[in-house]
Image 1 (cartoon, rainbow, N blue to C red):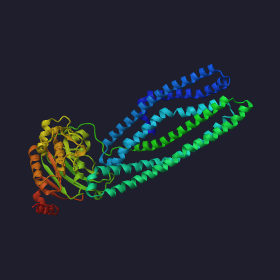
Image 2: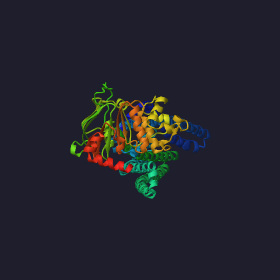
Image 3: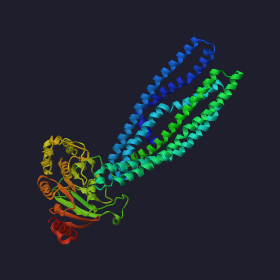
Image 4: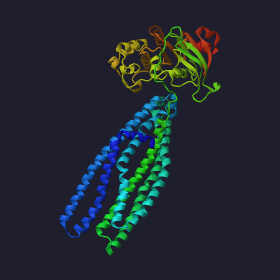
Amino acid sequence: MTKLAKYLKFYKAQIIFGPIFKLIETILELCCPILVAKIIDYGVANADTGFILKYGLIVVLLNIIGFGFAIACQKCASVTSVGVATKIREDMYRKINSFSHAEIDKFGTSSMLTRLTNDVFQIELMVSILIRVAIRCPCLLIGSIILSMGINLKLSLVFLVVIPILTIILIMFTKKTMPFYKLVRQRLDVVSRITRENLSGVRVVRAFNHQEEERERFHEANEKLVKTSISVSQISALLNPLIFLIVDFAIIAILWFGGIEVNVGGLSQGELIAFCNYMVTLSNALITTSRIYVNFVQSTASAHRINEVLDTSPSIEFKDKRLNITKDENNPILEFRGVGFSYNAKETDPERMFIKNLTFSLMPNETLGIIGSTGSGKTTIANLITRFYDCNVGEILLYGKNIKDYPLKQLRDIVSITQQRSTLFSGTLRENMQIRKSNATDEEIISALKTSQAWDFVKDFPNTLDYKIMAGGKNVSGGQMQRLTIARSLIGEPKLLILDDSASALDFLTDLNLRKALKKDLNCATIIISQRTTTIKNADLIIVLDHGDVVGMGNHQDLMKDCTVYRETYISQTQREE
């Protein structure tokens, strides 16, 4: 929790004046029982209406003034809590966007969403409570004890007996509930993950008639969350009744011993009522304190989860200074030199790596084809070039410089990728096309759409480039989405274009026309990743992968002679197509 205290420095005025306003309200509240005692002892006892009206008006005035200070404190608390939560969200969002795929895989999307929403809200609630209540409760406790001691020292001993007992109870409940709140957050992550999977994969679930199994999986996770929440709620629910029970016994003791003092003349009736009022005030302060404890326990668990994200350093660090690069048509644009990669970032044994000792070079305007079975490492190579992951050993050079020396923006300007899973965002088609280059003109967009074979259907869209795309591209087909995402990658004149199995939903004729258009219209090196040999057969260099191992490298003719895997794949596919 202390790590998040740095966000409070932006609201110093609110943090100072908010508690001061609350302190003034608390002092005014503590004065009221004494005034009421005087009304009873002097006004009511002597039937002095003027005295009653005078002091009654003072009590009302004090409550009105206290109400004004309470509103001012609430304003300070609201500004601070909402502001702190906003800054934490911004920092978390910025941090999450700096993560490589390794950190995203570690936390999981659902968990990060829960931390960004529910956990931050818990901190927001705690900041508000601290400003509004943190100084009020101690003041009420201390003030009630001091004022009661001023009324009658012997009777105030009841307070000194009750407070240690209640403090011990609060500490015991805190220790008992702390682990449960952490567990609740973890199980909420699981429920969020299952919900997200079902909503994003609802078509697959329905296609395989798997609704009942998914409903059962959600029910099981939800039941675990419910049971944990009920367990902690049951423990917490005992706290208030237990405090009230002890306070009630204390009030009975005050009335019993106070009544004796009234009979012997050591205490007036008004003072006895004031004593009872201070006891009730004390009990309310302790109950509020217990709620603060519960919120503090929950907030501590949330703060720990937030700090896990904020304290995680990205495994991939990008430089800030742009590199001066020399574009030479006679030198490779891309080189892999003994590259080895494992999803375990600490792995250094080449034999245990997923990608092993990969070496090749790609010249400007050349085309590299990468083919292999599912899980052979094709997409991993694309992820290494774009630095979604970093290689464990070896180095990757872009224009003769290690890609680790490039700032992110410069690297993304040079390298453009269309990923295996096509994604479009809600908004107009133009806005989607301008993601890579924000100031792309309509002419640039239309040119890219023509090259990607998308203009034939886009021109028939209502409002063409102003056509509204639904979230996830739900209102376009799979083949249309692939062509649109390819067009998006072409905008901005990249020098290295990566197409990661991005034509899998296209028919053979459209695929052929796309490859011809790319060859004709583009002035850049291209990497085509595919499982179709027909898609990559005309590439200048073809790499054949099998479970991370390079089993063949060369052009189509060479591989047909020397690479059994490629030859068998080509023959089986061409025969099937025929």
